[in-house]
Amino acid sequence: MAVAGKLQTQTEEFWRDVYEVSDADLDLAASQILEASRPLAIEALSSTIILRHYQREREAATLHAKSGNVYQPLGSYQAGQRLLFTECDYKTGRVIEVREGHNRRYGGFNVIKVHFDADSTDAEFASDFPYPHPLNRPVEELLGKGDDSLSESDIVNAYRELVNAKLEVALQKNHDFVTFDDLWFLRELLPEMNDYVLNLAEASIDSTHHHPVAVREILADMNLQLTASLEAQLFALNLALGRDNRFVNVSLDENPVWYLRALMPATAFARPEILVPAQRTTGGEYIGSTMLELVEQIGDDLDFLPATAPTVGDTHIELSFPHLYSGTLPAGPRIIGALPATRATHVPITLIENRSGQKIDAWLCPAEAYICGLSDWYKKAGICIGAMIGLSQLPDPLTWQISITPIKGKKSEFICSAGISDGVLTLGNQRISLEVKVDRNMLIDVPEPAAIAAQMREAESSGLPLSTIVFHVFEELVKKFSKGGSVHAKSVYSAVNLIRRYSAVSVFAELTRRACYDPVGGGFWALEPSLQKTVYQTPAEMHERPLSSRGDTVKDPVIQYGRM
Image 1 (cartoon, rainbow, N blue to C red):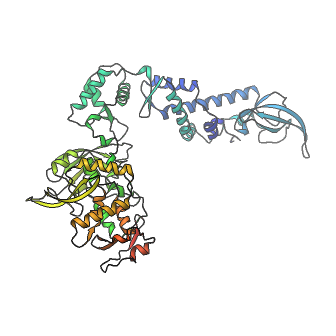
Image 2: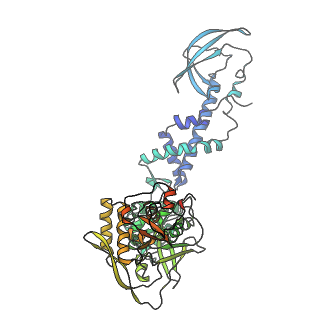
Image 3: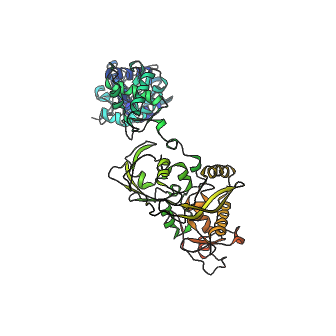
C-alpha cells in the first residue's frame, strides 16, 4: 500500500529551501575523492550527498517507529510530546495543547494542537480516535520508505541540480578543495607542478612548431616520474597551466588542449578598437529590396542576424578597412554553424589558400564573429580594401578553403585613395598596382593606415553621427570620382568605414530614409544637398521619393531587413 506522504528528502522544497551544505557533507565529499584517488565531477559528489541524506532520513523514520512516536489518530498524546507525521511529508512537531472533540457518528475523542518548528506553523489533529482511518494501520506500513514510487536514482536525478549549485559554492569557499573544468580534487593530494614544470610545458608546446598540444602529450613529453595517479597528474598540470597567463586552453571539449598566449594574436582575446561597432544591424531597418544582394556580397559581420542568415554554403566577403587593418575576416553563421558544439572563445582553425595550397593557421572567435591572425597573409597576398574573398567548407569542420583571384599582368592604375587632412577624411587619386581581384565599388587605397585608424578613434570618441559621415563621404565621392553625379552604395559603405565602424545595412538604411539621396539604378545613388535635413517617415515615402526632382529616380520596393 502506498504511503500517504513523502520523506523530506523526496521533496523539491527540502532541497531548494531547507537544505544547506554541512561540514559533514564536505567531509563526505573529501572521503569520496580520497577513496577514488582522482578528481570527481560535482555531479558525482552531490549524488552521494543526496543518497546519504535520504538514507539517514529513512533510518530516522524507522527509529521513530520503534519508539512509538509516529502519529496515528488512535493514539493518546500529551502536551510536550514530539511526534512524526507521515502524512505531512515526515515533518516532526510538538504537541502544545489537548482538547476534547466530538463527532455525531463516532462520539467523543480528543484534538491535539501541534507546532511544527520547520515552518513555524500550528495544526490540529484527532487523537484517541480508534475508528477506521487511513492512518490507523500498522506503523510499518505508514513509514515504509516514503513515496515508494520514487527510486534512489529518481531522487538523485530530480534534485541533483539544486544540490550542485549549493555544493559548488561551499566547495569554492573551502581551501581544502580545488577545481578545474568542473572537476574537484583535494589540495593535499595535488602533485607539485612548480615553475620548473611549467617552463618544461612551455618548451614542449613551443617545440611543436606552433600547434596546440593535448595535456596528455605535454605530461608524457616531460616524463616527470611522479607517484600520483595519472588522473591526479593531469588535473594538477591542467590546474597549474590554467593559473599561468602564458598558457591558453583552446580545446573544443572537456579534454584540455594547451597553447601559448604569446603565439596567438591579441585579437583572439579582445575585439580591436577599430572593430567596435558604432552601430550594428538589429533587424527591421528599412532598405531598398535591391540592396539585399549588396549586403550579401559585402558579408559584414555586423549584418549577421542568426535567426535569418543561412547556415550552409560558401561564404563571400568583400573586405572593409577595419578588418584589413586588424588582420581579421568576418565569420558568419555558415562558418560558426559548422563548428562542433563548444564553449570555446577562440578556436584554432586552418585555412588552405586555393592558389598555392598554403596552410594558414588562424583563430575563429565565435562570440566576435570573426577569424583573426591573418595580417601576415594579407600582406603576402596583397589583400586590399574591397578584396573579394571566398570561404568554402572542407570535410574537416575546422578547415576551410580560402579563395582569392590573383590579377595576371598587373599594371598600375589610378584608384580612390584616402588620407587625413586637418583631422578630416579626404579622398583623392593614387596610382597603384592591384594584386587580387576586388569589387571596384569597394576599392579604396589607404597609404597610411595608422593615420586612418587614429582618426577613427577620434571620430568614435566624439560620437560623430552616421548622417554627418554619410553626407561627407558622399560629397567627397561625387566631387572626386563621379562623372554623372552618382555614387555606388558600396562606395559609401566602404568610405564610411574609414571614419567609424558601421554595418552595411545601417549605411544603406541612411541612404534609404534620407530625402537628399535618390536611387538611380544598379546600386548607384544621386545627391540633392538641399534636402539633407529631410527624412522620409514611412516605407511608402522611401519607395516613392516624393521630393525627388530627378527623372531617373528608381522606385525600389522598401523592405524591413531580416523580416522578409
